[in-house]
Image (tube, rainbow, N blue to C red; front, top):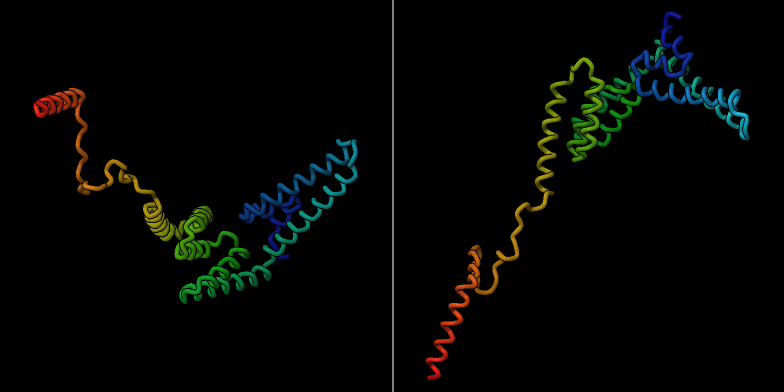
Length: 231
């Protein structure tokens, strides 16, 4: 028993509690929610529901609850049993090492697979999350890079990667602004009345329209000229 951690195993009597104790919050909450829903279904089918489908509700709830409990207990046993933990640690280190080597060779596809494999074995690994964010930024997948950086902010409780994360966020912000500037429409498009036409000088202002008084004076002057020429 010296290779086992007793506290998470005891807490795993309620599915998910051992994972919460070990800091695997997301998995623990999901397991606990499904386990609680199954227990509620058992209570409903056994005591509260008397209508049609009572047996089906009870059987399905029992199966779901048992499956979640067995998985939760086996998973926490695998995570806390010392020989298995050492073997998993070696595998994680190998995934991380291969990922870094592929990253330095600019083989980003293989590096991404290795880092994701490491995260599946150790959710929230800060170095894998940071390097995945860099790979996504290099590929131009800025939204994915942001998601990895947000996950890094949540999981890096010791803030060992705080400087690298802040630098990467600054670089991402610059790239996002440049992308918006390239894709944004022209804020001041040329208007139709300024478009050069026949006899127009590009850039010149169109002549101002005459006022009603000036137009009447011009018409009167033209009439006098026509009368004098006919006389």
